[in-house]
Length: 426
Image (cartoon, rainbow, N blue to C red; front, side):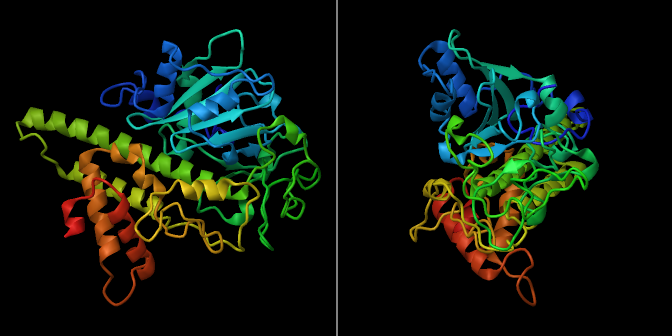
Protein backbone atom coordinates (compact mmCIF):
# COMPACT_ATOMS: atom_id res chain seq x y z
CA UNK A 1 0.00 0.00 0.00
CA UNK A 2 1.27 3.42 -0.93
CA UNK A 3 0.05 6.50 0.91
CA UNK A 4 2.35 9.33 -0.14
CA UNK A 5 3.24 12.54 1.63
CA UNK A 6 0.07 13.12 3.64
CA UNK A 7 -0.84 9.65 4.82
CA UNK A 8 -0.07 11.03 8.24
CA UNK A 9 -2.24 8.59 10.01
CA UNK A 10 -4.00 5.33 9.50
CA UNK A 11 -6.39 4.23 6.83
CA UNK A 12 -10.01 4.07 7.93
CA UNK A 13 -10.70 1.34 5.39
CA UNK A 14 -10.50 0.68 1.71
CA UNK A 15 -11.10 3.25 -0.97
CA UNK A 16 -14.71 4.40 -1.08
CA UNK A 17 -17.22 3.40 -3.78
CA UNK A 18 -16.87 6.89 -5.24
CA UNK A 19 -13.14 6.44 -5.72
CA UNK A 20 -13.53 2.92 -7.09
CA UNK A 21 -16.50 3.43 -9.40
CA UNK A 22 -16.71 7.08 -10.41
CA UNK A 23 -13.25 8.63 -10.52
CA UNK A 24 -12.05 6.87 -13.63
CA UNK A 25 -15.07 7.50 -15.83
CA UNK A 26 -16.68 10.60 -17.26
CA UNK A 27 -16.73 13.39 -16.28
CA UNK A 28 -13.77 13.17 -13.86
CA UNK A 29 -11.32 10.97 -15.79
CA UNK A 30 -9.08 10.94 -12.72
CA UNK A 31 -6.72 8.36 -14.21
CA UNK A 32 -6.01 10.47 -17.27
CA UNK A 33 -2.73 12.39 -17.26
CA UNK A 34 -2.98 15.45 -15.07
CA UNK A 35 -1.71 18.56 -16.82
CA UNK A 36 -2.72 21.72 -14.99
CA UNK A 37 -0.84 21.57 -11.68
CA UNK A 38 2.57 22.95 -10.79
CA UNK A 39 3.94 19.44 -10.22
CA UNK A 40 2.80 18.39 -13.67
CA UNK A 41 4.39 21.43 -15.28
CA UNK A 42 7.67 20.75 -13.51
CA UNK A 43 7.41 17.09 -14.53
CA UNK A 44 7.11 18.03 -18.19
CA UNK A 45 10.18 20.23 -17.92
CA UNK A 46 12.13 17.35 -16.38
CA UNK A 47 11.09 14.98 -19.15
CA UNK A 48 11.96 17.46 -21.89
CA UNK A 49 15.34 18.22 -20.36
CA UNK A 50 14.44 21.88 -19.92
CA UNK A 51 14.88 21.50 -16.14
CA UNK A 52 17.71 19.73 -14.34
CA UNK A 53 17.61 18.86 -10.64
CA UNK A 54 20.95 18.94 -8.85
CA UNK A 55 21.66 15.88 -6.69
CA UNK A 56 22.90 16.73 -3.22
CA UNK A 57 25.16 14.05 -1.69
CA UNK A 58 23.25 14.21 1.61
CA UNK A 59 19.68 15.20 0.70
CA UNK A 60 19.48 13.87 -2.85
CA UNK A 61 17.08 15.68 -5.14
CA UNK A 62 15.11 17.17 -2.23
CA UNK A 63 16.59 20.72 -2.10
CA UNK A 64 16.38 21.19 -5.87
CA UNK A 65 12.89 19.72 -5.95
CA UNK A 66 11.62 22.12 -3.30
CA UNK A 67 13.08 25.01 -5.25
CA UNK A 68 11.43 23.86 -8.47
CA UNK A 69 8.07 23.48 -6.71
CA UNK A 70 8.38 26.87 -4.99
CA UNK A 71 8.21 25.33 -1.51
CA UNK A 72 10.14 27.15 1.26
CA UNK A 73 12.31 25.07 3.59
CA UNK A 74 10.65 26.95 6.48
CA UNK A 75 7.50 24.88 5.89
CA UNK A 76 9.23 21.75 7.18
CA UNK A 77 7.19 19.79 9.71
CA UNK A 78 8.27 16.44 11.14
CA UNK A 79 6.23 13.32 11.87
CA UNK A 80 7.76 10.32 13.65
CA UNK A 81 4.80 7.95 13.78
CA UNK A 82 4.95 4.98 11.42
CA UNK A 83 2.12 6.19 9.24
CA UNK A 84 3.53 6.09 5.72
CA UNK A 85 4.19 3.39 3.15
CA UNK A 86 7.89 3.86 4.01
CA UNK A 87 7.00 3.31 7.67
CA UNK A 88 9.88 0.92 8.32
CA UNK A 89 12.26 3.86 7.88
CA UNK A 90 10.36 6.20 10.23
CA UNK A 91 10.95 6.41 13.98
CA UNK A 92 11.40 9.03 16.69
CA UNK A 93 15.10 9.02 15.77
CA UNK A 94 14.33 9.35 12.04
CA UNK A 95 11.18 11.42 11.48
CA UNK A 96 9.69 12.07 8.06
CA UNK A 97 9.99 15.66 6.87
CA UNK A 98 7.02 17.19 5.09
CA UNK A 99 7.22 20.44 3.13
CA UNK A 100 4.28 22.25 1.58
CA UNK A 101 3.43 25.07 -0.75
CA UNK A 102 0.05 26.15 -2.02
CA UNK A 103 0.19 23.74 -4.95
CA UNK A 104 2.28 20.78 -3.76
CA UNK A 105 3.42 18.70 -0.79
CA UNK A 106 6.71 16.82 -0.50
CA UNK A 107 7.61 14.10 2.00
CA UNK A 108 11.15 12.84 2.58
CA UNK A 109 13.05 10.62 5.01
CA UNK A 110 16.86 10.84 5.13
CA UNK A 111 18.29 7.86 3.28
CA UNK A 112 14.94 6.68 1.89
CA UNK A 113 14.83 5.61 -1.78
CA UNK A 114 11.73 7.64 -2.65
CA UNK A 115 10.47 11.19 -2.21
CA UNK A 116 6.67 11.40 -1.96
CA UNK A 117 4.75 14.17 -3.74
CA UNK A 118 1.15 15.32 -3.72
CA UNK A 119 0.09 17.68 -6.48
CA UNK A 120 -2.99 19.86 -6.09
CA UNK A 121 -4.16 19.79 -9.68
CA UNK A 122 -6.83 22.42 -10.43
CA UNK A 123 -8.71 19.99 -12.67
CA UNK A 124 -8.35 16.64 -10.88
CA UNK A 125 -7.71 17.52 -7.26
CA UNK A 126 -4.96 15.78 -5.27
CA UNK A 127 -2.75 13.59 -7.48
CA UNK A 128 0.04 11.43 -6.08
CA UNK A 129 3.60 10.83 -7.29
CA UNK A 130 6.96 9.52 -6.17
CA UNK A 131 10.49 10.53 -7.19
CA UNK A 132 13.35 8.06 -6.98
CA UNK A 133 16.43 9.26 -5.09
CA UNK A 134 18.98 7.83 -7.51
CA UNK A 135 21.76 10.05 -8.83
CA UNK A 136 22.40 7.57 -11.67
CA UNK A 137 18.91 8.04 -13.12
CA UNK A 138 17.31 11.16 -14.51
CA UNK A 139 14.69 12.38 -12.02
CA UNK A 140 11.11 11.62 -13.08
CA UNK A 141 7.76 11.86 -11.32
CA UNK A 142 5.96 8.50 -11.24
CA UNK A 143 2.23 8.80 -10.79
CA UNK A 144 0.49 6.45 -8.35
CA UNK A 145 -3.16 5.39 -8.57
CA UNK A 146 -4.90 2.52 -6.79
CA UNK A 147 -2.37 1.97 -4.03
CA UNK A 148 -2.55 5.62 -2.93
CA UNK A 149 -6.33 5.81 -2.97
CA UNK A 150 -6.48 3.01 -0.39
CA UNK A 151 -5.59 5.67 2.18
CA UNK A 152 -6.31 8.85 0.24
CA UNK A 153 -9.95 8.25 -0.72
CA UNK A 154 -11.61 7.28 2.54
CA UNK A 155 -14.20 8.72 4.90
CA UNK A 156 -11.69 11.17 6.40
CA UNK A 157 -11.23 12.73 2.95
CA UNK A 158 -14.99 12.73 2.29
CA UNK A 159 -14.66 9.60 0.15
CA UNK A 160 -12.67 11.36 -2.57
CA UNK A 161 -8.92 11.82 -3.20
CA UNK A 162 -7.54 14.04 -0.48
CA UNK A 163 -4.94 14.55 2.22
CA UNK A 164 -5.27 13.87 5.91
CA UNK A 165 -3.46 14.69 9.13
CA UNK A 166 -3.66 12.33 12.10
CA UNK A 167 -2.73 12.51 15.77
CA UNK A 168 -1.84 9.20 17.43
CA UNK A 169 -0.33 7.78 20.62
CA UNK A 170 3.05 6.46 19.40
CA UNK A 171 5.13 3.83 21.13
CA UNK A 172 8.91 4.16 21.43
CA UNK A 173 9.39 2.85 17.88
CA UNK A 174 6.83 5.30 16.47
CA UNK A 175 4.14 2.69 15.92
CA UNK A 176 0.64 4.02 16.71
CA UNK A 177 -1.09 2.38 19.65
CA UNK A 178 -4.50 1.89 18.08
CA UNK A 179 -6.24 0.94 21.31
CA UNK A 180 -5.57 4.46 22.60
CA UNK A 181 -7.41 6.05 19.70
CA UNK A 182 -6.45 8.47 16.96
CA UNK A 183 -7.65 11.92 15.94
CA UNK A 184 -8.19 13.49 12.54
CA UNK A 185 -6.63 16.96 12.82
CA UNK A 186 -8.18 20.04 11.24
CA UNK A 187 -8.59 23.63 12.41
CA UNK A 188 -11.57 22.35 14.42
CA UNK A 189 -9.60 19.81 16.48
CA UNK A 190 -9.13 20.72 20.17
CA UNK A 191 -5.58 21.88 20.81
CA UNK A 192 -4.96 19.24 23.43
CA UNK A 193 -5.65 16.42 20.95
CA UNK A 194 -3.27 17.56 18.23
CA UNK A 195 0.12 16.34 17.05
CA UNK A 196 0.53 12.94 18.66
CA UNK A 197 3.40 11.37 16.72
CA UNK A 198 4.70 14.74 15.53
CA UNK A 199 7.57 16.94 16.56
CA UNK A 200 6.47 20.47 17.41
CA UNK A 201 8.75 23.47 17.96
CA UNK A 202 7.37 26.65 19.44
CA UNK A 203 5.80 28.07 22.55
CA UNK A 204 2.17 27.93 23.60
CA UNK A 205 2.05 28.96 27.25
CA UNK A 206 -0.09 26.83 29.53
CA UNK A 207 -1.81 25.09 26.62
CA UNK A 208 -0.84 21.46 26.02
CA UNK A 209 -0.75 19.13 23.03
CA UNK A 210 0.40 15.56 22.32
CA UNK A 211 3.51 16.35 20.30
CA UNK A 212 7.15 15.49 21.05
CA UNK A 213 6.18 12.63 23.36
CA UNK A 214 6.15 8.84 23.44
CA UNK A 215 3.20 6.99 24.96
CA UNK A 216 3.71 5.48 28.40
CA UNK A 217 4.12 1.71 28.30
CA UNK A 218 1.48 1.04 30.96
CA UNK A 219 -1.17 3.66 30.21
CA UNK A 220 -0.53 3.71 26.44
CA UNK A 221 -1.18 7.45 26.57
CA UNK A 222 0.99 10.49 25.90
CA UNK A 223 2.00 12.80 28.73
CA UNK A 224 1.24 16.32 27.40
CA UNK A 225 3.72 17.89 29.81
CA UNK A 226 6.61 15.99 28.27
CA UNK A 227 6.49 17.79 24.96
CA UNK A 228 5.30 21.25 25.91
CA UNK A 229 7.01 24.45 24.74
CA UNK A 230 9.94 22.73 23.02
CA UNK A 231 12.17 24.99 20.94
CA UNK A 232 15.10 22.65 20.19
CA UNK A 233 14.65 19.12 18.83
CA UNK A 234 18.31 18.09 19.12
CA UNK A 235 17.45 16.15 22.29
CA UNK A 236 15.30 13.78 20.24
CA UNK A 237 17.26 13.10 17.02
CA UNK A 238 20.11 14.34 14.85
CA UNK A 239 18.66 17.52 13.35
CA UNK A 240 21.74 18.00 11.16
CA UNK A 241 20.37 15.34 8.80
CA UNK A 242 17.46 17.61 7.91
CA UNK A 243 17.17 20.77 5.86
CA UNK A 244 15.86 22.61 8.93
CA UNK A 245 16.01 21.95 12.69
CA UNK A 246 12.38 23.08 13.06
CA UNK A 247 8.91 21.56 13.03
CA UNK A 248 7.24 24.91 13.51
CA UNK A 249 3.93 24.98 15.39
CA UNK A 250 2.60 27.77 13.16
CA UNK A 251 3.47 25.80 10.03
CA UNK A 252 1.63 22.80 11.47
CA UNK A 253 -1.51 24.84 12.05
CA UNK A 254 -1.49 26.37 8.57
CA UNK A 255 -0.80 22.94 7.10
CA UNK A 256 -3.86 21.46 8.82
CA UNK A 257 -6.14 24.22 7.58
CA UNK A 258 -4.77 24.01 4.05
CA UNK A 259 -5.20 20.24 3.80
CA UNK A 260 -8.81 20.42 5.00
CA UNK A 261 -9.69 23.35 2.73
CA UNK A 262 -8.21 21.67 -0.32
CA UNK A 263 -10.15 18.51 0.50
CA UNK A 264 -13.35 20.57 0.62
CA UNK A 265 -12.60 22.22 -2.70
CA UNK A 266 -11.81 18.87 -4.31
CA UNK A 267 -14.97 17.22 -2.97
CA UNK A 268 -17.15 20.08 -4.13
CA UNK A 269 -15.60 19.93 -7.57
CA UNK A 270 -16.00 16.17 -7.90
CA UNK A 271 -19.61 16.02 -6.73
CA UNK A 272 -20.82 19.03 -8.67
CA UNK A 273 -19.13 17.94 -11.91
CA UNK A 274 -20.81 14.55 -11.64
CA UNK A 275 -24.19 16.15 -10.87
CA UNK A 276 -23.92 18.50 -13.84
CA UNK A 277 -22.84 15.65 -16.14
CA UNK A 278 -25.85 13.57 -15.12
CA UNK A 279 -28.09 16.61 -15.44
CA UNK A 280 -26.88 17.14 -19.01
CA UNK A 281 -27.79 13.54 -19.82
CA UNK A 282 -31.28 14.01 -18.36
CA UNK A 283 -31.71 17.22 -20.33
CA UNK A 284 -30.71 15.41 -23.52
CA UNK A 285 -33.14 12.57 -22.89
CA UNK A 286 -36.09 14.86 -22.12
CA UNK A 287 -35.21 17.50 -24.66
CA UNK A 288 -34.73 20.25 -22.07
CA UNK A 289 -32.58 23.26 -22.95
CA UNK A 290 -28.88 22.92 -22.08
CA UNK A 291 -28.17 24.30 -18.64
CA UNK A 292 -31.55 23.37 -17.19
CA UNK A 293 -31.14 22.44 -13.52
CA UNK A 294 -33.60 20.14 -11.81
CA UNK A 295 -34.21 20.19 -8.08
CA UNK A 296 -31.71 17.47 -7.15
CA UNK A 297 -28.87 19.23 -8.98
CA UNK A 298 -29.75 22.58 -7.44
CA UNK A 299 -29.73 20.97 -3.99
CA UNK A 300 -26.25 19.53 -4.57
CA UNK A 301 -24.99 22.96 -5.63
CA UNK A 302 -26.49 24.55 -2.52
CA UNK A 303 -25.19 21.83 -0.19
CA UNK A 304 -21.63 21.88 -1.55
CA UNK A 305 -21.51 25.68 -1.48
CA UNK A 306 -22.62 25.66 2.16
CA UNK A 307 -19.99 23.10 3.20
CA UNK A 308 -17.27 24.88 1.25
CA UNK A 309 -18.08 28.22 2.88
CA UNK A 310 -18.15 26.68 6.35
CA UNK A 311 -14.54 25.56 5.90
CA UNK A 312 -13.45 28.68 4.01
CA UNK A 313 -14.74 30.97 6.75
CA UNK A 314 -13.26 28.74 9.49
CA UNK A 315 -16.62 28.50 11.21
CA UNK A 316 -15.64 25.48 13.31
CA UNK A 317 -12.14 26.71 14.18
CA UNK A 318 -11.21 26.39 17.84
CA UNK A 319 -10.16 29.40 19.86
CA UNK A 320 -6.52 29.10 20.82
CA UNK A 321 -6.09 28.42 24.53
CA UNK A 322 -2.89 30.51 24.60
CA UNK A 323 -0.80 32.66 22.23
CA UNK A 324 1.33 30.70 19.75
CA UNK A 325 4.91 31.56 18.74
CA UNK A 326 6.88 29.56 16.17
CA UNK A 327 10.62 28.99 16.01
CA UNK A 328 11.41 29.34 12.31
CA UNK A 329 10.87 32.02 9.71
CA UNK A 330 7.68 30.34 8.51
CA UNK A 331 5.19 32.90 9.83
CA UNK A 332 6.97 35.85 8.21
CA UNK A 333 7.50 34.04 4.90
CA UNK A 334 3.92 32.85 4.75
CA UNK A 335 2.50 36.28 5.49
CA UNK A 336 4.80 37.96 2.96
CA UNK A 337 3.19 35.94 0.15
CA UNK A 338 -0.22 37.46 0.77
CA UNK A 339 -2.20 39.57 -1.71
CA UNK A 340 -2.62 42.89 0.10
CA UNK A 341 -5.23 45.60 -0.14
CA UNK A 342 -4.36 49.31 -0.03
CA UNK A 343 -4.13 49.11 3.77
CA UNK A 344 -1.62 46.26 3.63
CA UNK A 345 -4.10 43.64 4.83
CA UNK A 346 -4.04 40.09 3.49
CA UNK A 347 -5.89 36.83 4.06
CA UNK A 348 -2.48 35.38 4.98
CA UNK A 349 -2.16 37.71 7.97
CA UNK A 350 -1.83 35.64 11.14
CA UNK A 351 -3.38 36.26 14.54
CA UNK A 352 -1.88 33.48 16.72
CA UNK A 353 -3.28 34.94 19.94
CA UNK A 354 -6.89 33.77 19.79
CA UNK A 355 -7.11 32.12 16.36
CA UNK A 356 -4.89 31.16 13.45
CA UNK A 357 -5.72 33.91 10.93
CA UNK A 358 -6.34 37.57 11.57
CA UNK A 359 -9.24 37.56 9.08
CA UNK A 360 -11.27 34.32 9.09
CA UNK A 361 -11.40 33.60 5.38
CA UNK A 362 -9.10 31.08 3.72
CA UNK A 363 -6.31 32.41 1.53
CA UNK A 364 -7.09 29.49 -0.80
CA UNK A 365 -9.91 31.57 -2.23
CA UNK A 366 -7.06 32.87 -4.42
CA UNK A 367 -5.99 29.39 -5.54
CA UNK A 368 -6.29 27.92 -9.05
CA UNK A 369 -8.29 24.97 -7.70
CA UNK A 370 -10.90 27.36 -6.30
CA UNK A 371 -11.09 29.33 -9.55
CA UNK A 372 -11.47 26.11 -11.58
CA UNK A 373 -14.56 24.96 -9.69
CA UNK A 374 -17.61 24.64 -11.98
CA UNK A 375 -19.10 28.01 -12.87
CA UNK A 376 -22.50 26.91 -11.57
CA UNK A 377 -21.01 26.22 -8.14
CA UNK A 378 -18.97 29.41 -8.03
CA UNK A 379 -22.11 31.38 -8.80
CA UNK A 380 -23.78 29.98 -5.67
CA UNK A 381 -20.64 30.36 -3.54
CA UNK A 382 -20.17 34.00 -4.52
CA UNK A 383 -23.83 34.82 -3.99
CA UNK A 384 -23.91 33.24 -0.54
CA UNK A 385 -20.57 34.76 0.44
CA UNK A 386 -21.75 38.19 -0.66
CA UNK A 387 -24.85 37.79 1.52
CA UNK A 388 -22.72 36.81 4.52
CA UNK A 389 -20.24 39.66 4.09
CA UNK A 390 -22.57 42.49 3.10
CA UNK A 391 -25.54 42.12 5.42
CA UNK A 392 -26.26 41.61 9.10
CA UNK A 393 -28.95 39.30 10.38
CA UNK A 394 -32.15 40.79 11.74
CA UNK A 395 -31.88 41.57 15.42
CA UNK A 396 -28.09 41.54 15.71
CA UNK A 397 -24.87 40.07 14.44
CA UNK A 398 -25.06 36.86 12.44
CA UNK A 399 -23.44 33.87 14.10
CA UNK A 400 -21.19 33.27 11.11
CA UNK A 401 -18.99 36.40 11.27
CA UNK A 402 -18.67 39.44 13.49
CA UNK A 403 -19.13 42.83 11.81
CA UNK A 404 -15.42 43.84 11.85
CA UNK A 405 -14.46 40.55 10.23
CA UNK A 406 -17.17 40.85 7.59
CA UNK A 407 -16.03 44.34 6.67
CA UNK A 408 -12.33 43.48 6.54
CA UNK A 409 -12.79 40.31 4.49
CA UNK A 410 -15.07 42.08 2.02
CA UNK A 411 -12.61 44.93 1.55
CA UNK A 412 -9.67 42.57 1.12
CA UNK A 413 -11.49 40.44 -1.44
CA UNK A 414 -12.66 43.46 -3.41
CA UNK A 415 -9.05 44.65 -3.62
CA UNK A 416 -7.34 41.32 -4.30
CA UNK A 417 -9.70 38.76 -5.83
CA UNK A 418 -10.14 38.51 -9.58
CA UNK A 419 -13.38 37.21 -11.07
CA UNK A 420 -15.82 38.54 -8.49
CA UNK A 421 -19.35 39.06 -9.82
CA UNK A 422 -20.20 42.60 -10.87
CA UNK A 423 -22.81 42.98 -8.11
CA UNK A 424 -20.04 42.75 -5.52
CA UNK A 425 -18.82 46.15 -6.71
CA UNK A 426 -22.21 47.84 -7.07
